[in-house]
Image (cartoon, rainbow, N blue to C red; front, side):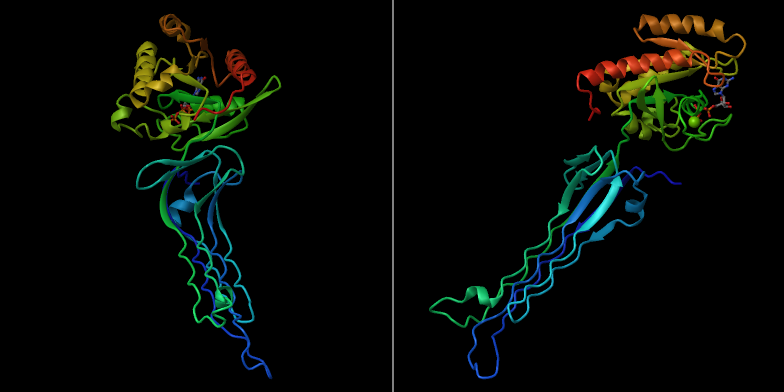
Length: 341
Ligand SMILES: Nc1nc2c(ncn2[C@@H]2O[C@H](COP(=O)(O)OP(=O)(O)OP(=O)(O)O)[C@@H](O)[C@H]2O)c(=O)[nH]1
Ligand SMILES: [Mg+2]
C-alpha cells in the first residue's frame, strides 16, 4: 500500500439556498399574504481524525471536496432543506495548515478530533420574513450566502512513543518485528523500508508504539538517499532510539555511524536532540561484534546516552532496551505525558 503523508486539498462548502418570493393563492382568498420560505443552509466541510485511515492517500488522489448546497425556499412558507455536511476522514496525527499562509489550523491528535474547514453559506430569507404592517406584500427576498472556499495543506505526523533512527540495514525493521506484531519487509539490502511502519509493543503491562522509519544516511539533510522527509514522523516521539549496526560487513565504524546519525538529526531540528535518546548497538550475535562495540559503548556513555548491545534477530539484550523505554515512558506518563507537538 502506498504511504502518503502530505497532500493539498481544496474545499468548498455548500452555498445557502435562496429565499423564495411567493404569495398565498387559494380559491376565495384573492390577496393572500407573502409565503416565501427561507433557503436552507449549505453543508460544511469537516475534517475528522479516524482510526480507520492510515495515510493521506485518498486526499492525494481526490483533492477536491465540495459539500452539498442548501435548497431554495419555496412557497407556502417551506424552508429549503439544509445541505449535508461533508466529512473528510484522515489519520490520527494529521496537521492541517492554511495553504497560503502556512499557519497551523488544527492538529488532530486524538480519534474524533474534528474541525470545520469551510462553513456553509446561510440560506437567504424568503419574502414572508420581510412583511411589515406598512409593507404587506414585499416583492423581494434574499439570495443565499456563498459557502466558503479554501485550500489547505495536510501533513501526517505519526504519533508514536519511540522512533527508530538508523542507517539502512541496521536492523530497525527486524527489531520492530521482534518486539511487536508489525511485519515489515526485512532484507539484506539498503532502503528495504520505504514507508514508516508502526508497531504496538506490550511489555510488562505497558503498551507503547514504536515507529520504524526508512533509513537515513550521511548527507540526508541535503537530500541524499530518501533525505529527511520521514524524520517528521519522529518529531512527536518521546524517545529516539538510534540503531547502530555492529556487523563486520559494515565498513563504517560504529562510533562514526552514531555521530553521523546525531548530526543528521540535529541538522533537521535541534530540538530533536533535547529528547530522550537511547542507543542500541545491534547484531551482537555476529562474531567480533563485542570488540566493535567496546569503543562505541564508551563513546555513547560519554555523551550520556543509555546504551545497549543487543540483537534483534536472536533477541539478546532486547529486554533491557524495553525496560529502559517503559521506565522512561512511565515517568513521563505520571507527569501527564502527552504526545509532543
Ligand atoms: N545477525 C544479525 N542480523 C540482523 C540483525 N538484525 C537485522 N539483521 C539483518 O540485517 C539485514 C537488514 O535488516 P532490516 O531489519 O531490514 O534493516 P533496516 O534497518 O530495517 O533496513 P532499511 O529498511 O533498509 O533501512 C537483514 O538481512 C536482517 O536479517 C541481528 O540482530 N543480527
Ligand atoms: Mg527496514
